[in-house]
Length: 337
Image (cartoon, rainbow, N blue to C red; front, top):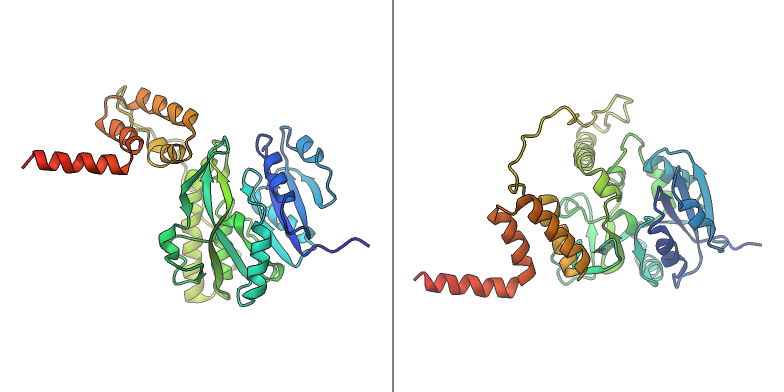
């Protein structure tokens, strides 16, 4: 007889040929081995399927469906899951080998938490890790090994990272799974509904690396993400007041405003500040020492914004480092006296 898995990994995938092999391997390398890996191929048109089928491990359960979106893919995975626990994992990210073992150990010693998660660090598309950039931040935890999260402190950093979640399957079932009305931010909508009944724990340990690349869900759905995050919070507040929200009542929900017809003023050559690069990603590339992406970011940013002092400052200050910049500021203030 085949052993019934204790944990079911859920991995929805769509056109992830460049990263899915490494992601699957990081799961198969887990020191806790009693799991199944349910992969839902959501209509990929690249080599994703071929790469998945190259793995020879009977813990992998592969399913193909026409493109239906993340929420439907995850709900399909929940239906297929045989484990008592559900563990999420994205197709472009990496877990450390003892991630699942430590999570199972924590849940068994803290049965009051039916859902837990971990901190994450970011890595570049080339797999270089930026240890300084993590979520939740070290400040969120203070000196605590874990933080209990409820409706009162969830708002601080939205610390439940979807792809690190390990939860009892019954918690997903009680909440009704993911709501397909949310094409993105479906996880935030789910956590807010779960937090109405349960507290969860977030462990102050990085066991998962989130890959930043141009085709990741966060990058592709940037504008929609913000809209649906806000909508999830709005529905949460509405449930607190009257016990239901528009989805529960079967009403039509708002959709993101169209921006296709809005005309963007044409910027002067050399005066476009590349906030999409310099406000965050560039700093991650530097911390990860991914010099190829650092140079690429500098080249693009200077091409578009070389006339702006703001561009030069955003490039040079992180490159020089905080200590050198602070020294320069002190010297400048002394010379002005």
